[in-house]
Each structure stands twice: as structure tokens, then as C-alpha cells.
Image (cartoon, rainbow, N blue to C red; front, side, top):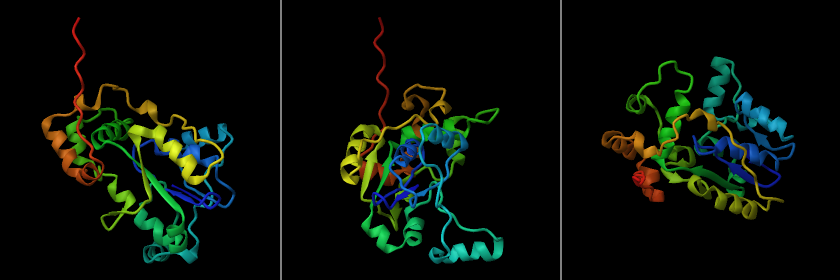
Length: 235
């Protein structure tokens, strides 16, 4: 997550949607007072190599604490932080209505079936025996990104960039946020998926329907469809 007071925007980070690449790209436009949340050490190194700002200002001020934050402080002796994938419902009260209502808020969404495959390879990347895709889906919590950028079942951001059309999204960012140049996305976490077949080839009718049920809100909202791979022509 990034909150830029310099350019008055809030980036709400979803899962497996090029969010880390977007965070790194947006860091070049952040000033010393902006909030930049923590990412993996390898990705922080990428930011440093590019000469960009890294994690900063992500300790939540006591004045912004919510009841759950005070409970954690008193009973667990832990301070509250702005977090990488913090959902909109938690960001809004911690930033306050003035900032939330006046800043441009945006996120990225992805075809849920494609996203599920990406999450499968990422979440199982370090396991010695990778479970089947079906077993992973059966145990995977929160396949849907919708709750990250919605509050009480309603989209809470001003704009949703489609992962499938990131180029247009980057053009929108430059214009809407009045950035001095178009963001350039580095490649982050792309090596975690060794199987580059079309996502549809990993699904059975049962797993396809499972994702459709789990991600019904974004499928309905953006008209996503399960796209079967086009078979190659035999020579």
C-alpha cells in the first residue's frame, strides 16, 4: 500500500495483480512524508537498486488507533502498522475521512481464474511436494480480491485498473495523478510460476466452478469470463 500526500493518491494493493511492481514504480513519485509499506527483502532491494524510496512512515500514529489497535497494544504489546495488503475498510478509518475522501484511490483487479493459478504457484513455491491445484483451491482462504477494495460490499476506490490492460492503466495514472512521467513497472515475483501454459489448462469443470463461486462479485462487476485456450493448429 502507498499513500502519497505529494500527489494525493492511495494505492490499495490486491493479491497477484502486479501490485508489488506497481508499488515499486509508484515509489519514484513519493516524498519524505508519504506512506510506503513493507515488501519482501528481494523487492526492497530492487527499489534500492533503482534509487527509489523504500519502506517509510508505516508505523500507525497513536492518534489514528482504532479499538482493535488499542487492544493489540495493551494485551499483546504490539504497535499497529500500515500493512502491505491492508483492505480499504481498515485504511479509511486509520487515515481519516479528510484524506480518504479527498485523495484518488485506486487498485488493480485480474481475471479470477488467471489470478487463482498465479496464487497457486506463488503460495506453493517453497513446498517440497506441491499439492494439486484442486487441493490447493480447497484449502486456500480468500481467493477473492473484492473484499480488499470494497467496504460493506461496495467498491470503495475511485478507479480499478484491469491487470489485462495495464498499459492503459499506467496512462490513466499519469493523467489522473498529474505525474511528471508515466510509471514504468519492473518485473517482480514473475519467476514463481514455472508452468506457463494458459491458465485454463489447469482447470477442471469442478475447479472452474469453485473459483466462479468464490469470486462471484468481481466476475459480475467486471464481466470476467473463463477463457479456454485456443488449440494450436496441427501441421
